[in-house]
Length: 347
Image 1: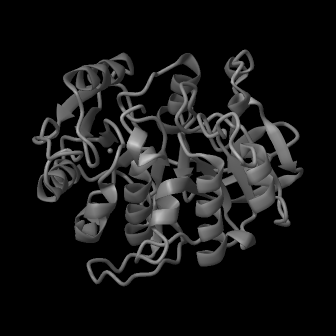
Image 2 (image 1 turned 180 degrees about the vertical axis):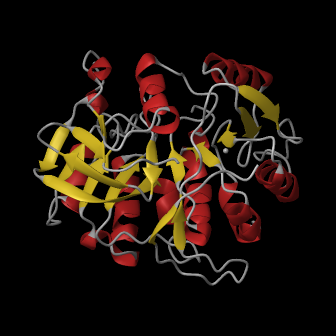
């Protein structure tokens, strides 16, 4: 996610604690080791809207409120959602305060980030993870929110959701899978390829099987830029035997190469069960550049891995965006271009 272009672009809930997860717990603020599923979202529930990364316009706030209301949800705004400090949505302390208050507020059923941008990585070492563990509830977003989702899941075991930010375009496809995952949970839920993308002439939307096959594992992933930025921190990515998903926007092939190389050298990505790549829009080389193409880069960096890999599933910085729960068992099928959740993500 090109930081020079980022402007283009979740009461104490009922929870079930099941399979243990292992994480690097250098932060003494938490000692939790089990997954926790937040309660499902229902019509009439209250969603807390926050801005843990970049600032938002009034237009985005209005759009976020409308999106929530169209889902039959009520809205509570973070105290500091209109704050601004340069490229940030206020100071680190202000953004932390809104996050903490939403988790502590028993009238709030879920927390939804209005946008990404930049800044979530600055606050994750300061988060009160004991507070979150005591008050589990839905947390959702993508892009820069990747850092927040991973930190919360690693430190508390709370299932978090990589899905549209509150100000996204809530298309029919997007809403269908939001409801299927968050509001109407099933024991098994299949997310099919978005046929809505088939008419897009941008080559970034053309799906491609890099390595065929079927893979199963717990879901993990997010924005490539953020996953690379987390390397070497207390929140570094761990993917052995997991089903990985990766997306980005506005990054030229050599930068995609650099970040994938960093992950290959700093994480156990080569031990993943399989990899799903989203739509990498605006990631092609300019005409005349001495460069590999996006697909050549992806094949060069990932094609040698002994696992199923597919490009072009409908998640990331695009309109038709399905929701994925970090930590939930799932299965991908490259032949069917589908993802199946093998358990409910909410209680």
